[in-house]
Length: 137
Image 1 (cartoon, helix red, strand yellow):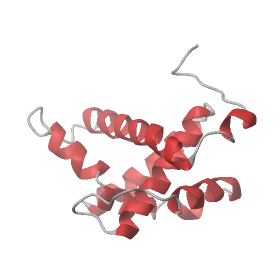
Image 2: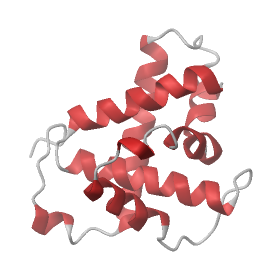
Image 3: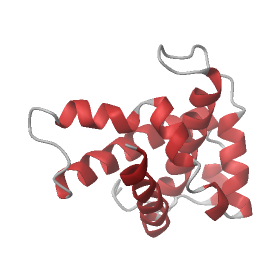
Image 4: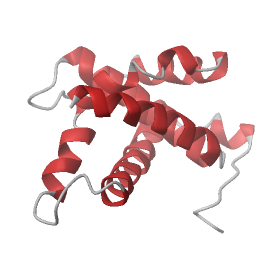
């Protein structure tokens, strides 16, 4: 199996929980942020971890996801809602419940897109978020 070029079918996707999608999407999003930071010279070697955390923390994700909400298709909105309303055990320090739910929803969407091999769409949404990041941070 090629885990970098996936194309999971609808039957597979229906059996993955929103939190399962979020678990995967968290890694996808963080890898995209790390790549973006390196390619755009946004941090020095010493500051790469700190810069990454700045973008992947729930409050930042909740702020940046607002840039893509108007761009989501109806199906993507459904995945986002499913992730937002999933029941999580605890909210990390430094994040409100609303921020954490928005971050989980974003991660669910990214995991969902990744499993289907929809990397063009992932890049499109991520680029829109990073345009917002240039103004927000």
